[in-house]
Amino acid sequence: MSLTPDITVHDVSHDPRLYNEDLAPTPPSRRTWTTYNYIALWFSMSMEVTTYMLASSLIAGGMNWKQAVGTILLGNLIVLLPMILNAHAGSKYGIPFPVFVRASFGTRGANIPALLRALVACGWFGIQSWLGGQAIFAMLNVLWPQTANRPGVLWACFLGFWLLNMYVVWRGVESIRFLQSFSAPFMLVMSLTLLFWMLHKAGGFGPMLSTPSRFHSTSAFLKFFFPSLTAMVGYWATLSLNIPDFTRYAKNQDAQIVGQAFGLPVAMTLYSFIGIACTSASVSIFGEPIWSPITLLGRFHQPLVAFLALIALLVATLNVNIGANVVSPSNDFSNLAPRYISFRTGGLITGFLGLAMMPWKLMSSFGSYIFGWLIGYSGLLGPVAGIMIADYFLLRRTSLDTNSLYRRNGVYEYSNGINPRAIVALIAGVFVALIGLVAPLVRFLYDYAWFVGFFVAGGVYLVLMKRTAAVRVGEVEE
Image (cartoon, rainbow, N blue to C red):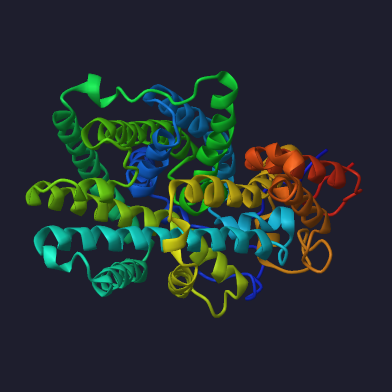
């Protein structure tokens, strides 16, 4: 099995249907992100409301704090592997996710996984905007209690926060790097402040972490543990696909590898512990586990403390919404029609679709958040990750013909721009991962949706590709 050497993207003319300035390989002059930028990226994206609620939902579901921390750490160590593997192409070639995925799905077929990723990101964008609006509404309730029973005020807060996100999108990707570098240390300080405030209210770490596990047998625990672990992996299944959108700006490969290997597990475990500890403390303070930090802050009647904490939530929510939920879908929508859809236009499309997906329903309870939203979409994205990694590392040995990624009738044309083998593998992976939703006898497949989809799709893709005697430049030779 051999592959052709790299070819620079400037050797041929580009097809305008596949190329614009936002999708073009990042030139060396713009590859300025260091290890610190990637650590800051993960700290800023981890320290936000949905991470807190991800962790607190494990306590609400019956785990004790040790079980919850262990589940979150393991899940993030697992997802770190596909994250770093898919990041490699972005750093090496300077290409974003929708361009990278053309190698496996074809120049036109790449729109299918790109749109799957984009639609999930739109859902997350709506969720984050809704939570940000709730935080603003909660601040107004602290300052002016008479607003508490006025739904119109809540909707105005929601739309106002949505407009703020759109403004940052309009400023471009470099504003994202500045915002994340500034806010990461600020969010760490504010999160620790919340932790110690709850520690004081609970009367020490003993009472704070005293909530026992509600599982009285190993089988009962495992029945909750495995779907929860899948949800932990699913939480970052989105970014494990489009991480090239960020690593295309890396100064070198080591910057992104070291930054991610440290930033992701450390940031997620640290901030998750804060959510776990505060939720556990809420049991001893209020008699029930309160999984939403916005609801929790509303239980305290110290205006200054609540106001500062909610400001921190707003900063965190803005960070992750722009960084994780706008960059990728903007590029994905741009990939549909590069001549007409820029990064900014793609961001506006993301924002409007986020509104249309009714995020207030997606976050109606911790059960719908964990077992519906997170596990459900992981069954769609796990197969895409399996195909991408199998193609780039096992078939192509990290060698791509970058010219052909930007033109039709090249080595990634396959059948009229679509690789039917990738489509078959994707359908197989999604089908097996999600069949448990309608077939109770194989419900366990859904509980492991990301893992099942990843390995089924990756395996099917390898078998189909190796059976094809591909002799064109850039494809596998048998």
